[in-house]
Length: 249
Image (cartoon, rainbow, N blue to C red; front, side):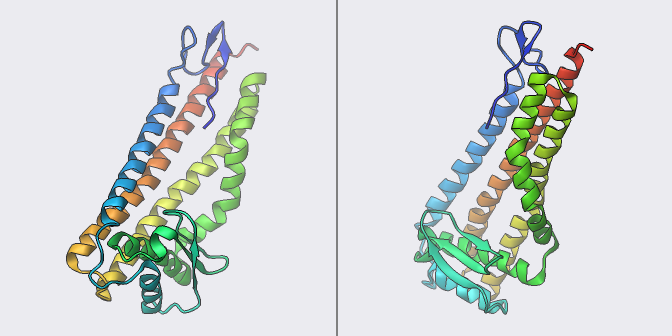
């Protein structure tokens, strides 16, 4: 997160019209930070709660993942263990499901649901789910945009070059677009996971309710991340417009 401070007629904040060093657009960044911190706290709290609740069937995350994949007709996806907590992910390039230490060997309801969620991405990959394909296509552009957006925009502020301000906003918009496309991908993966867990009777009704809470809290982190990025994008636009208004030809 990079906060920009600029001068205009002796004050800070081109778009914020701040006084005595205060730029009100910082509030947008702080609101976004607050949203992401709340979402992160919620997912950690929910996961911690249901990581203590053992599944009745006794399957570990790795075992549940294998059953979900096979029940979906997928036999060419490998399952590996990686270090960390909640670092689980599916790699479509190598068709590998990587489960974290907190998921792989745990037989908790939370671990089974997280593992199943990642299997949901493997199922999406198998059926060429549109948003997943689009997200994969956007990865290079999103990475490029997120890395260059702030330096380009900052240069535009320093040198009063509107084209650079516009390019910076466009580059940052690519990262926002990636996060927007990520939402349906994540929600759909959870829906697919819960559907298989229910149809295979790996989790009972009460356990499925707990699973919905775990996956729902995890999904909210993506919503919070998008909201934070949208607020930052709004700040860039406000600063750029304010810069245009203070520009002297």
